[in-house]
Length: 184
Image (cartoon, rainbow, N blue to C red):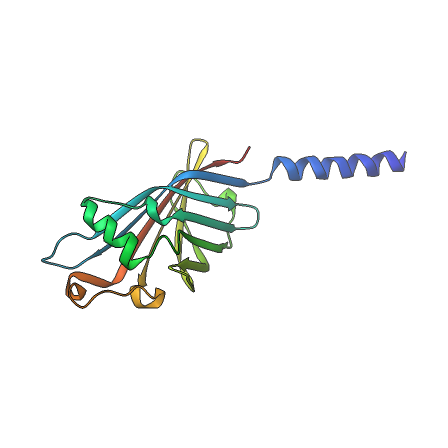
């Protein structure tokens, strides 16, 4: 009888851990960046094909964006971005691997909940630590994550030619939005 109780308890633990697995994913996340300077042409792009995997149980998060997925209003800017600045043929992906600290899924409601996030951002073949805030809110079955931070182009070996140096910000604002759904 005791053995049946132990087996039942083990089965309940396994089933509950499977049921409460909190892995969430999107393959249509949005990443925007802006490096505009006042009085000059807008330098901004958007990528709507970023992938994000978030494990709400552990707080681990991973983001992948194909660099050639960024779209600019002006096609020539897109060409220069890929060929000269980011070198997307040599470095086709940008990644972030990190952790949302102190994430508690039960605290996330239809109003924004803010948490700390830190991890490694790899861009243009260079990996640097990033630490910022991330907000989550529950929207139906989806968990909506938003994050914003800035990076310096020099930190990621993004060389700006002197001819256009005054037209491109040294600090680039990055905004991320992911509508995460439970991974099936």
